[in-house]
Length: 183
Image (cartoon, rainbow, N blue to C red; front, top):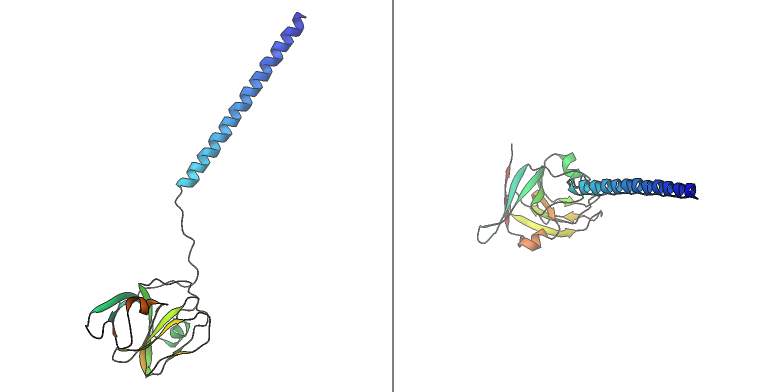
């Protein structure tokens, strides 16, 4: 009987040691999980790389009120001068800020026509005469269409900004533009 009690005590001691060892590993595993979570939270999150071509500032453009001569709004511009760049324009771009725009400089003043093929955002297309006066605005041109957006009169310049821009800032036909290109 005494021998049996010693065995039971020994077995209980081993069982207790086993439980302590298991508990120790459980605490270590939980500590590692908590530490890993804290490290994950502390890592700065980066935005995914934007898709499509990105805006490149090549100058600045101001919209000038026709009546007062005051600047209505100034934006950074990307410039398209050659035929291939003009044909591509805003194609494939997924976004544009309302502080940005694209200026197309044509070879000569004549009626201009633009489409929205492969353009993913609505645009205000502003047609501008040789003397820098806004001829007309095609507001919120719908994306992904071949519908022709045309000037009323001979345009030497065309400015594209995000859809709703002209209404938001009160830019209208008769107002003027003034731009400066970076070297």
